[in-house]
Length: 445
Image (cartoon, rainbow, N blue to C red):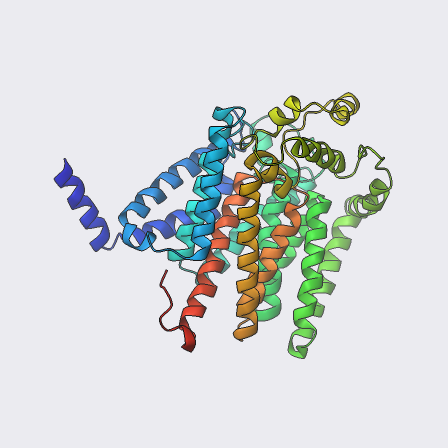
């Protein structure tokens, strides 16, 4: 038996089906295929099969990591931070309120320790092995546009999958095949934050077409947090463009075209989008001193209640996906008011940083923030040192995802893609750093 396994490993590492190829197939299948997986016969039509796919993908990636153990054993600062991050989550899980939930996640969320571990493994594999080509970038954007077109169809009342389930569209805003308009908007925003900068900096028409479709889809989700994140990206992007006159025409084309898309969707929906925009300022003014208002599905109230629980136990997390148990344990007046007024439970903080602090603990939060700071610092360094617009595109993608994460929650269909892309960013600036004349002896990945 041992001899047979040894021969299999030797075959995998010497033949055409190399671990590197397997890793790329798995990583790209997560990005291209997993978000589209839905099923009728599962406890959650939009989530259950995606989680199962991720478990299988994670198992294969782990096996591939074993096959490439000599390479994977090499350390660099981003890997060390991620390993510390995971270790802190393991520690929190051991002392969690509900260890089963902390390991596998809530049934309708699924982001327990196992899934976070797969995110981190995907990050490490992407940072080392992901092959990024122009053809694959275009393929990824085209596939994301399929989801975008589905969003737009939903906006006008057409949903093939819900028809199969014999259900009606009841959400105000498109949910795509992700199952929730907030998650759908995050998915769309990930690729929109790539397509717009790609068109402006590279000028290829395919990126322009993708930008229009994805922007229309983002509007159709009617999620204001992602709208604001996209607006912030545009403002930061203008800083990169303002001093380069050769980019002004394409920038103007994009601004004008996105305005046309907004006008068309707004006019054909009886002003739904403009009404949604106006509601942002109106709802901010309605939040009372308890934070209980209507702002963004009561996000301010949720933040205040969650932070009160954190103040009571600031160091230890409750366990991943266990915010509901933590708040129920640390009962507060604001929580009782919230339940009485809205008849809703709080199971997510609607802010990824607050959520991580409450569920993962202070050490996990620090690890994540340190990782963000390191990557931002290296990206800024790469932008200054190398005359390559790809680092600006990566920077815009990264800050856009971070901006939406302040008002949204993590979800497997989006977070898995984010961590793979984050690994790709690390790979690119590390490779560039190693090629610099003063770093010829830099440690290899």
